[in-house]
Length: 254
Image (tube, rainbow, N blue to C red; front, side):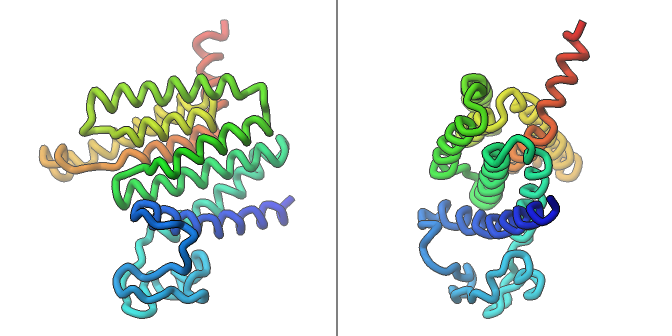
């Protein structure tokens, strides 16, 4: 129903704002529930009227009301992205019941947080991926208990694969990426395979663009891989199972 989709989109908008708060605070060792947000530049407390998801950023033209410091564009983009993602999750998985929708929305929420933390501080915090893993198992047990063993196996394979890469090439990939891959396996099951392929392809394309622009010096630039895995996770969520079925039918169907 359109009204339900709109309500879930508004929930996504609000949680997108909360994802920004969580990402901003956990990397600084602060509690996400530690009171009102403050401007990083001047320390002024952000009033409620300036903390309305997306709308406040647009009305303030992306700047702090008190000191005029710029508010990064990634925050309203995440808010808008989660609103769209939550609505899409309801439309795509609503027939499977509330637990299926909750599982998809929880996954999108986690991807939003790790994207922000990796962009800002180049880390994927344990305090995020740990509860995410627990949530994935609990929601899968509610939505489709029979799928849980396959998802645990997919998580072990995905996390183990990226762990091996991070150990072999620590400058190119961190342990946080391996933990995120494990969590993605719990949420996606077999669809984690195309998700990782998309993530690696997007990361490789970005690397080629940097080399084209900056030459050999681009190899020394630190590039967070979490956002690329998050992109792959979105693709895996909405199209991963169909991609796996297409592959199996195309190459093993006969």
